[in-house]
Image (cartoon, rainbow, N blue to C red):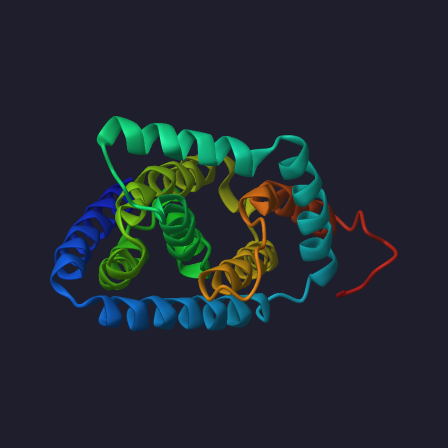
Length: 235
């Protein structure tokens, strides 16, 4: 998992630099950066969503993921865990959870993440993930300058998610076909749109409770690939 380890290190380095800059910048500059991150997140999410033709897979994943996340009270539990962590580490960052979730989704939902992890898992080298690491390092700098310390801790779910795909690819080979990767990317894109809306304070969307959609999209994507949705074509 060389590529994932390099990615984690680059995000850590970028996040720390961003936090250093954040404490030296005037509040008005931080506010503008914060708004820029919100707009970028919104635009990135829309562009990711438009990549998939399996819209039914994305819709079903969001519906079932939202039901599962609500029943599990994921937002409430995440907030409690976040508060406990902040108290333990003596952080006072109000946007800790938002920074962690935003960074995790931005670093992990793109097709480059999934393709790179699969390529390394199948023994084709970590080049894609190393390229992604450079981009993520600069992104982490901007995100932590706007959203704070939560971005630093996004390396934990980043390592588990990206490393998990690499390990799965070592065992499952060509399970993740291109259309399934596009559906996963599109589902992540919808979550990023929700995050962008939250960052810009346009509405309050419970994005955390939609995260289980990332598991359902694998299930429904496999079902679509196996033609278990005979009542639809490309929708």
